[in-house]
Length: 341
Image (cartoon, rainbow, N blue to C red; front, side):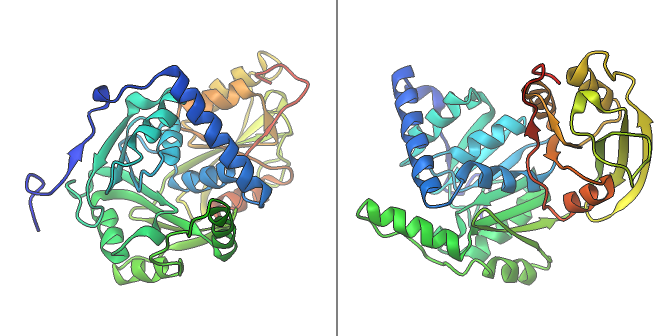
């Protein structure tokens, strides 16, 4: 194994790549047009990206992405996490990647590294979590790449790629461009087998035309805050609006099961709405929040703190079980209320 000083890698000097406002705006227009084309064929790309990223959970340290490509995933990661390093074997799309990050105003949080993901220059456990989205089918040596992701990651490793229906959609779209979709390996289920060969059992999920494989190298400590309509506890119902809930259910989990739960009053009820309630919940150091709905300002506050937010209507117990099985969706935006409701 070569030392990090001997390996063929380099970081991109972002200051040497000029980005104009006009280029950033035009690039964004092209991205949105591409998203609309995928949606026409039934693939909601942004929802898919967030569903995968949410599997990483909270992270205070650095996050690694494998397969920068055009930088959509890196920009989304940087919106949620404090420090992101993204790796690609080629710099052909690096300017596009930077324009996507600049549009989201997160370029300063991202480091771009050009190297072979099968032999990375990073030290063991350097990153808290790592992710690769729709990169597996491009890997020439997928076992080596996955082995390297495990080596440099101390916590959660997430790999996702298209399901059979997802590959059908992207092949059709590439044909519209007069191209063939490049695929070194389209049997995505091999990801689970490769994890097993490296000594890890991956949890598998399928959503938004993607297959997602999750390995947690250490147990995840979750503190989940649920907005409640009453003080009934875990059997009670999730409140439809963050700012109107009378109580919070605070549950602790290890990523697989609920360890304990307690019901506490929302002392901010009707005294400041959802923005006040966010502060109340954060007193309990929550890592995840479940609510029937909340305003955009409240969602931004949670996002800035790296807190994952999910939506549910029904019993709190069912919501918690669905969260642990990674089957909860995004929280709805409260309509007709104050923005922080």
